[in-house]
Length: 274
Ligand code: PAF
Image (cartoon, rainbow, N blue to C red):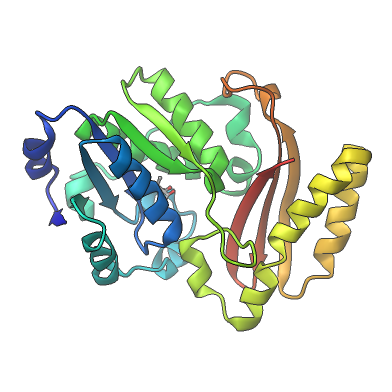
């Protein structure tokens, strides 16, 4: 593993290789990130892992301040994974003097769920991801399905900007009790962590209910169950036929249940196919 703070040094290393995999992260690496990195290593000649807490995608300065950072530990984890190029820029390297969000128009899909709850968030994600993709021109770039709406957005961005990169969506990696791995999980105290383990139960129950109930009945049931979970405040629970979200899904019809909630003060999201 070698870590660089300037993209120019990395470009020199990768400009002649056959395939480059990019794994964008905000650090505090966990097994979910490591599974993306392992997949990238198995599919590309060189792999770049970026670690950058992107200020443009946070809705509050408090959330940005509290976002977990552990660069020393991150680099140690990458060290154990063989031949990784780590890109660890600061704000100046990433944005120069132009720390502004680009405004994308991805239509209806950005106005629901995360787009609705976190205004401007997807413009911030799009801005940094487009910068990284243009910087390194990777063959493949890897994103987790936990942030499913983000994954779809990035696919749309790549199509719209006519970038030549294959976006690879990777399955959500879960803790033993089913909680989706997330850097934010480490901010939960013990009782909150226990409550967070119920998120997947709500999603699994939605899958069961939806087999024999209407959308409305399923939602009503899940909202009722969510109220019983200590420390958990539901922000939304939604079910979408992803093929209805016109233009954004090339893949076959797929029904997914999406959830966002606060456990204590920590905001968590998850989704499953149902
Ligand atoms: O999913 C994340 O960690 C971030 O949104 C990403 C894609 C690294 C952009 O900052």
